[in-house]
Image: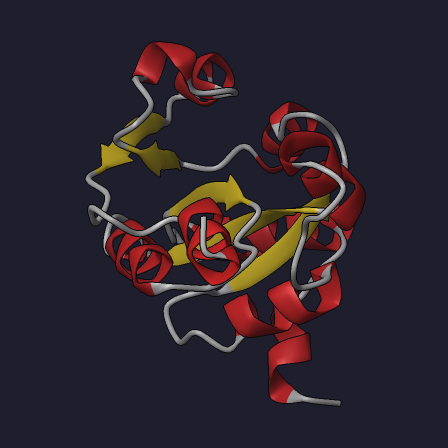
Length: 160
């Protein structure tokens, strides 16, 4: 088994792992996304997210939920490949999947200390912000690196 595979959890197993981390007084940061074509913007964002706490958890859209969000031609990389790439990053501590339109159920299960999204969101429109805040947690946004998006890269490859 590859070392990166040990960072990939089912939602239930991750909830158990988070309980163990909490017993060690570790702050758990959660973010989510498709992370279809890993690029500099993703790396910068995830690195900054990890700096907000002790453990970084990434909720990854399943292939089916990416297709619902981005269209039938996506994802470019399947969920197995995307999860392995994320798990290979030293600042990502755990990866899990969600197949729903939003990660709300996953956030309710994991109850992270800190919920993070990009600065293209406001706290008011971040899914699960109310849940995290009601549980005593924080919600933060991180500035994005201009000019980097998976959709933009796909369009560039297609010559659009």
